Image (cartoon, rainbow, N blue to C red; front, side, top):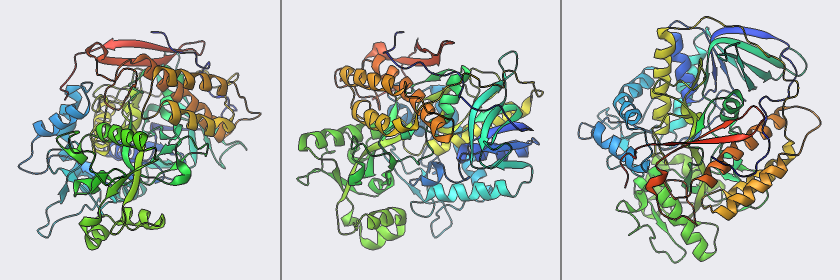
Amino acid sequence: MPVPLLPTLGLRLAAPDPGWFESTDVVVIGSGIAGLACALHLREAGLHVTVVTKVNTDDGSTRWAQGGIAAVLDPEDSWAAHARDTLVAGAGLCDVAAVDLLVREGPARIRELIRWGADFDRAADGALQLTREGGHHARRIVHAGGDATGAEVQRALHAAVRRDPWIRLFEHSLALDLLRDSKGRACGVTLHVLGEGTPDGVGAILGRTVVLASGGMGQIYASTTNPVVSTGDGVALAMRAGAAVTDVEFVQFHPTALMVPSQVPGSGAASQQQPLISEALRGEGALLRDGEGRRFMVGQHDLAELAPRDIVAKASHRVMVEEGTSHVWLDARHLGREFLATRFPTIVASCLAAGLNPADDLIPVAPAAHYASGGVRTDASGRTTIQGLYACGEVACTGVHGANRLASNSLLEGLVFARRITEDIAGSPPPQRDPVNFSAEGGWLVDPAVRPSLQSEMSRNAGVLRSGDSLAAAARTIASLGAARPTEAGTATWEAANLLTVASALVAAATSREETRGSHWRQDYPARQDAWCGHLIAGIDDDGTLNQTWEPTTCSLQP
């Protein structure tokens, strides 16, 4: 399938040859819920694990999750109901079998998380408190600290990992490229570790298998809820190694990020992290209003403010365009000062820091890039198209999210598929294989100075609203930015190369998909089309050209 004119992409990053080597059973790249859960399961299976994380262990997306984790824990709820809500949100592109695994295995994974030390909010009788979020027809979201679920989960997993001497943590470490043996099987990674080995810190960790759990790519946009470390490193690494990547056009924009004026998309400022206003606040009764004070979600969907995220984000965007403003309003004043302070302390603190009090003031909110529903393609055991390479969490595309992730299914997916990966690896772990082609001679770099321009262009022309013309403009900009070369390698240049790689794949897929579906909104093709029920699979040819193939499928349940 043809793709727009885009830059030639690298098959390896330019970096010095490894100056040091270590060996382990399994290399896990990433230290959020997916990576740490996988590491703990692997240790319980008797394997030695090395976890590679980009900054500190708790600097990824997991600790910023506010709402909670979805699972069927209420006797009046059911797996079938959770599955149906997931399939409806996914707009026809969910893998039904993967969704079934997610909802059936989810409750057991929550109990494992509690066993590892996670302390969830409970009622007076000791039962887990359950709340509701967008797209859910039942209360099935467990939470901690009111709206600090991710922080509690990260704390518990980090503490459990630190207690195990056979889990080695490499912090301040950026994974560069996958190492493969003579038959193309994964057998380790090269990485840059600050202060380790050679002056530049480049080394290699050899492993019998490699697990990607490196999170998302929200930093390709100027306005995002993702932390600054979310630069698409895992997806880009997998593409350079030859793994299949799919559904990257489906980036979910959270409808209610706190709108910081200096971060209005297209302002040209470097991307920062927009404070998230959890969907759980709407689950407890907060209302969306336009500039005239009208509830604009009434009549848009039977769930109104609790419609799936793509529907709410699109409705908010329409209001913003009609009114010529950078935000809409979230009204939580009627919930009361005491309730807000107790149930949503994180949100209240973010608002107060911005000079607002949600008990008295309307909260300015706008859609911001939040979650990548697509990623490195895997099967039900987390296996990618490269033998020995697994993927889990936001970096992966397991098929459970389809075209639009259901709220609070993300942390659940990380837990469920981390366990499934471990079962597959522990069942028959391969021997350590010898890597080939250590050298990155002739590798690729991108000037880090292009990063703000790339982020602004993506927000302007490949964000919430897209068209053939806007995507063509984005492709031209990406092509010109890709020609910029730095004088020397470093973390900033490697991140810029990763951002440009995933942005190229996203723009190509969004250009090809001539319909509106889930979180992909084409202004020039405003309706869902049955002919587009399928998946665009991206890869990089041996000459660095981005390629796409089309895989039709049968649409799953959709609204």
